[in-house]
Length: 435
Ligand SMILES: *[C@@H]1O[C@H](CO)[C@@H](O)[C@H](O)[C@H]1NC(C)=O
Ligand SMILES: *[C@@H]1O[C@H](CO)[C@@H](O)[C@H](O)[C@H]1NC(C)=O
Ligand SMILES: *[C@@H]1O[C@H](CO)[C@@H](O)[C@H](O)[C@H]1NC(C)=O
Ligand SMILES: *[C@@H]1O[C@H](CO)[C@@H](O)[C@H](O)[C@H]1NC(C)=O
Ligand SMILES: *[C@@H]1O[C@H](CO)[C@@H](O)[C@H](O)[C@H]1NC(C)=O
Image (tube, rainbow, N blue to C red):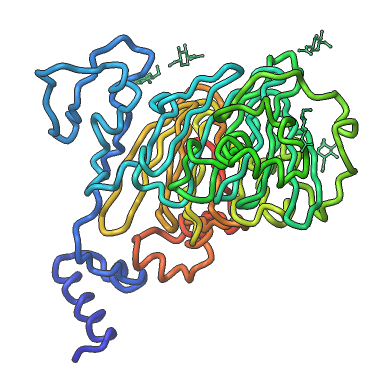
């Protein structure tokens, strides 16, 4: 057995034998002898500019990788997904697909609106959360219904009125506008109606706390009553059977109606009496500014009724990036509101895939999978991180390294002291362009 002191003096001797000044071997701690080669220093820059009118080729010439396409090309899709078409050389293995554009969802058109969904059938990795994009014209109603999963919603545009009644017989009616949210616990009955706005109604995002949720399998008021014998209905409500001569023979789902009264008070049978509100004016929360953008988090701490879903609204300025991070135990369903982005998901075991996103796309990131969200466009990137959890949590890679003994970090990454000292000990969340 050799001690480190013996090894160091042997190294010093060897160095002087090859005429390297002895001091260099002794004064700085020896870098761990590399047991594996260094990672490539190829920066993997974009291969083309999207605005250019080009035929993209899957060729990374700096690495001698790829070849031209001889067969057919779907150029619009290739240009939208450059990091799939010609992946960075750091990608490896096979991370399951984690991108779904709502534009690929089968839409359900109704008089008064439409709805399209993404669930585990569309994207197999998304086991814990599912989403619906819904549009209601002025006055249109998403019919009174309930379902076995909890529902969280974000208003993309317009104004809506929602209502629910709790198992305790308490009532809540509330209004929401662009950037606001609501939450209905699993099984709670609710209604959704677009108010009279100049925007022409409303469009919103619904996120459910199960990946197998289906918007086509909710429990609807009309659908139920159409499937109960009429005399049972009459007995249940203790009224004459003729009162039910005009109930629909099948579900309405989304249908037109007169808009609700402007003042929610005049829509209330009894005053609201739930202990907690089921809506939250997220639009009124001030975002925390960072060097590269801003973020706001709304979870159980400010919106206590929302016990299974929470969210962060993130803006990333041009050239900036949501930093390398992960969420310890929280599955993430990401929705892009504006701008362009790329994400690399790191799934352990040398598995990493980079994908590109634009407004209207969904990403799904399982718990603990490392990732970043980079603004790759020329406008502000805005997106929502939505979690299957009551509480928002993340781990910043930079903060972890900054708060770990520097010698440990150095032993892993071979960074110099100045670089380690420069790492932010405060979580950045969103960083600016590269220095
Ligand atoms: C894309 O455009 C920028 C700005 O004009 C330029 O610096 C860059 O080299 C271009 N990249 C490619 C791959 O053409
Ligand atoms: C931003 O990008 C879009 C699409 O790539 C392009 O059409 C537009 O000209 C760009 N705008 C600026 C200011 O560069
Ligand atoms: C909506 O409001 C406008 C302005 O108050 C009014 O003119 C219009 O009739 C309303 N539309 C409906 C469908 O009630
Ligand atoms: C229910 O209403 C119809 C029509 O008004 C009437 O003929 C009938 O007798 C009523 N039935 C009962 C049980 O009251
Ligand atoms: C948000 O910021 C505005 C402008 O700085 C300020 O007037 C307002 O009080 C802030 N709101 C909250 C809830 O902190």
